[in-house]
Length: 450
Ligand SMILES: [Zn+2]
Ligand SMILES: [Zn+2]
Image (tube, rainbow, N blue to C red; front, side, top):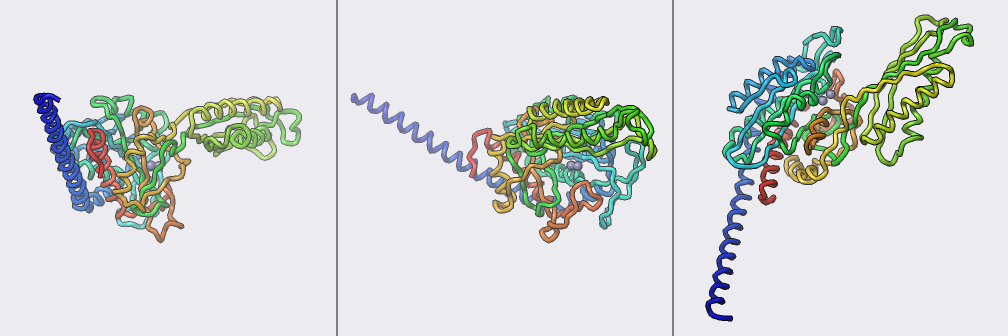
């Protein structure tokens, strides 16, 4: 090798070595700074914990029904404005979005909390129990945060405050979504995640991933559970009207008895799940919840109306099941000379956690809650309108346990008038969401993990 070429070769090697060392030093420094930021999140979460619990108690004491979250959203918007966020209000009626622009380049990530309460009369014996009454679909009702959305709102307010305090070190943009009407808009109104998306919540700036959590009764306080893929069911509303012909209860052959036909239809519907769809693929449920017909014991009525709910996890199966519900109802009715009008309305799609995102972020949740306190969630047959965001962008939804260990066997479920939250668990939710933002940005800008 000529001397000059050899020198150039050595020179190049040296430059490469220096570059490698420099990059290594930078990566180590970055990893250390990432560690420092994580530690900072944890200490700020501890510092803000009591304030967050007070927010939660205040929301709990003054709950608001879906699409009526006026006070709650005002408090949220004021909080975000004080933090210096760009704040948008009035989205999907009472929705609030806060935008935190970090000091460093990086991805746009969204965090979502829901704000609405339920028409339930609270029976929990706490000093901040709700005494609020309101009207729901024309009925006078009590109002209670029986699903824990008060906690979700307070947790996300705390995350906003923590991340705002370290804004200069945040990579990218964090979009805080405070959503109304997760439990469903009142009759005749639109609302919830679907309307938020229609009104542009996933645009300008467009998040590339979204995270959300739900406090869950029956999971030990501070534990986190989640699963990749289908996690919560799709929900569809079902109404079937069987029309027969009214007659005397003593002379059924003169008319067509819709009560007997309805009973046959109900039994027939149960064979769809057990006999007609592939049970090894995903589970499904068809439930008839109401059945109304007739006014007197000895009159066979003209018609019977049934309403119910359909739960599925797979869109193909959902379509199949809808078709089979129609076919089963109509042919069974026809066999007796009756007719069946079947009406199905899709409510929420299945909550499906994005596989790659879930795999990527699982270590974060394990680190935050502790390896032993994170487990695979079973599929939930309940539904969540977080699913609408997940249909647009990769999303991850996880459950946070809020039941003390000694009460696991007896704890009232979400939506019960006795639903209770162990507030000491909420800080885990705050840390989890804040760490997810930090780690997601670090991972997508190529920084090392651990
Ligand atoms: Zn709920
Ligand atoms: Zn809920």
